[in-house]
Picture 1 (cartoon, rainbow, N blue to C red):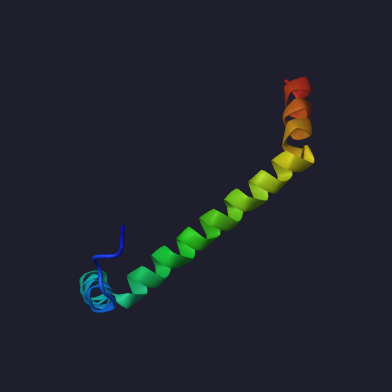
Picture 2: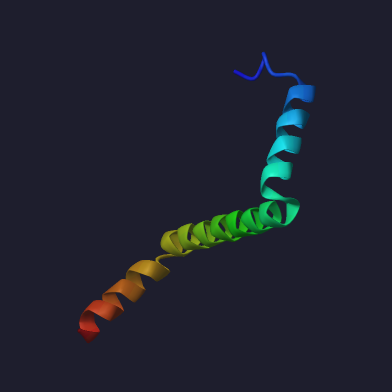
Length: 63
């Protein structure tokens, strides 16, 4: 799929994106994306441990 795209083309596209959005905005987006992935991984780990289901059952019994 990427066989037709050279390294220089990717560098040019990255430079244009950096000029449009600014490096600070891109850094914020990268940080937000990283924290979202971290949260997703921890949620998946909790689900496989059974913590989420026991918490959901505890909440159902309180209501």
